[in-house]
Length: 118
Image 1 (tube, rainbow, N blue to C red):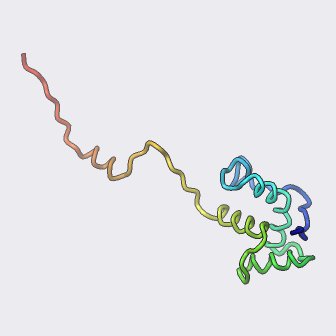
Image 2: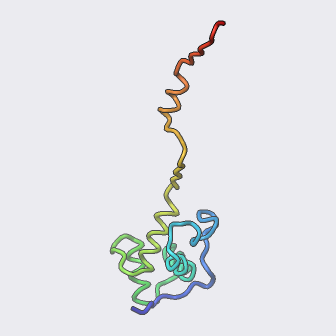
Image 3: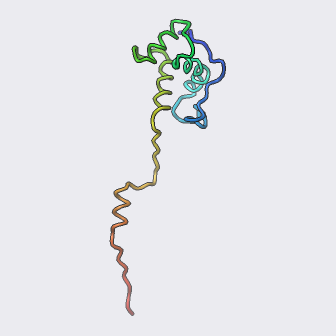
């Protein structure tokens, strides 16, 4: 399927939410990050109402952004994914942390010292 969508005037970056770039974020595949960089500025402008759609795909994209239609194309799915990730809280998982209840239990335990009288 041929993409009937305008390239952005410049590469699209989101240094506020993806400080190390889309590729290194771990959230996007290499293809997704490249497509987002190439077409993201156009998608952002269309979504924000700063640009008028020119083709069939751009008109469909606007309907997807307004949640009137489901995302069908790769670009639409990537943009929805980007918006979901950009506007949600990031979750961090560590490998060696304790849950709050475990920490509270450790703080409340009585420490017993055994000494030998000799």
